[in-house]
Image: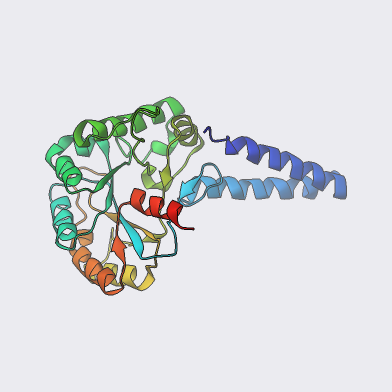
Length: 273
């Protein structure tokens, strides 16, 4: 099913609001300016807030009923950190979703194979994870997203075919969570499932104990938790997440919460009456 372009709906809503404002208050700077200001707020929200669905439907959590949560790890794999994350997940019988940077995944094929063998999910976090990605044009966005999907397919056996005969494309998480208009056009053309998060672990800085405490204090059923097992800049590492993970998994077990992949969480959501 084709997703309607929400930018067109937004433009139509703006035009309607402006016409209504001018019709009621007459033409003035105020009657034209208020709808324009509201439009700017919505556009800023759609671009800068990762969970926003203003421009494109964005998944942030699953069903709040039940006992399932999803841990998601960004910016990997990292040969110094990802193995420790995988070891902890295996120890607790937990599964997770790894939103991988394509070039990093290609550089570490054995980690990709281990993730797939241990029934974790590989999501697409673009090929390069450029900090300038918000300024890429649509053609370059398409190339970057497809590059990430193709390496996942090659190394983990996930089909990138969107036809009825193939498996679904991997889930996609925009780098830094920013959904610029060119990126929105790209994901719309590819009809991707875009995934954000409902709980940020704040694991890019801070000590492991505080990271675990934050997650365990705030988590609730259905949450998609953002964590990191890698870094978008070569030569840098984020070990705090792996160090916090055993305590998080132990705490989730005590709370009666079970860790599944994002896709499993969403399928459970569909099955909930």
